[in-house]
Length: 388
Image (cartoon, rainbow, N blue to C red):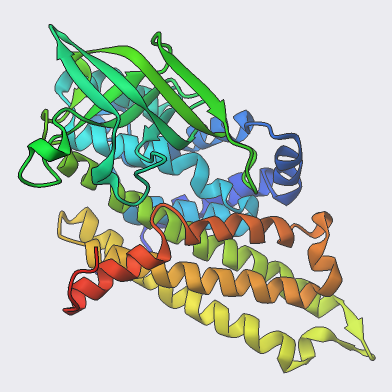
């Protein structure tokens, strides 16, 4: 690994700061309150080239890796965008771009990747189901071949952007689990046109991040051309795995980014707010908890860099990715918690935004994989017996 800051990284960081300065806390406070998609921000990310960071140059992208994407995400989050800095990039520019680049046909790459890079195509990712959350192998949505098409039936839950997405990469079973030797077999991925007949989308009222909708998606006899199969039939698990590590790395960047945003805001407040004749930041009961959490976030960011470097080299990185996600979330949550405490009662007020960042960062405990499942993966790598 090289810890020097090259020209590309400096440019990404400075560009992300510039974007975040235009779309800061007040902007997201309003979007959250109104429940509005931030089209202006989405378009600005396209103008900055961030939607195309992971898209190969031959498809009009930047041809970079998860190190650069993680830096862009963390900087956007930390400089004022909060969770939106990752949220608006992780699905389309992250998972979909990676999935199609690594597993798509030439025709699929030509059809989708230039539009992704230009910010002209929005993807949702259809994995989770009511009875198959973390246990993805238990998905019940199924696809049956009918001539040169597949017919999809089933449902998905918590599918972000599905109310407005152009396409969805959807995980299905093409062979029932009871008919395969291994649970990973019989899984197939498709690129689903969200305008296809038979799709019904219903938004789920939720705790935070209401500048995008997360929805239930119901599919009844939805026909998909065989040319929309992503990867090999019955062997889609490995194509899905290719997309999961970038998602975990993205949420690692979100956790440290939101945590740093809250901490930096609290530090400024602690310098300005005086009690008993001195700034509250002079009291170690205020400064030390935030400082300790900040140190942990800096360490977690280094682990994310290592995991991203391994990913970009094509090396196995599941252990490092889960470690990065787990420690980033714990450190980030503690940073926001202690930052809210530094504000006292005002930390509960909308106008200071910390309460919103608290609601946002708590999602990272649950998604894209729960902390418990991240620790399960780490424990297995350490030599503990399998627990699931």
